[in-house]
Length: 185
Image (cartoon, rainbow, N blue to C red; front, side, top):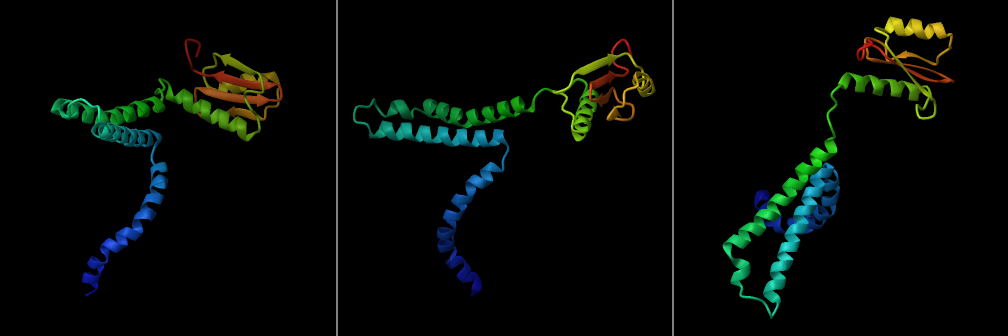
């Protein structure tokens, strides 16, 4: 009995749940990636534009023969454009927003770690002079060279380990050692 009642009430439930589904659709749409949102909105726009054009054609009094707009080739062409434009837009935006892949990911990681360390010590690399030191072959040589200056550094040889970049910083500036890079390392 309960199953029969469930199926009998299904249209009424659907009628009452429809507004809540329509109101929650924008929230679900916002959960998608930007290229997907743009593709979906472009598809909706193109579909509405096509429907409006056809309705406008059929409702106008001074129109050409109906066959001009309903030829199979023209309808197929319009439907193909309406279907393919959002797909191409999605893939183009996705590739554009991905950006370029780095040729030197280990340098990028060391840079990001160093900048994060500087920021954790309250140092903004844009507000201090940046000194670039080329030539040290390893972290020991970087430490000895910086130790020879006699500076008391708040950031002292970060990131640690065998990294291509090492950051030192004090109130005078940020010292960036490029260890083992290029022809000098």
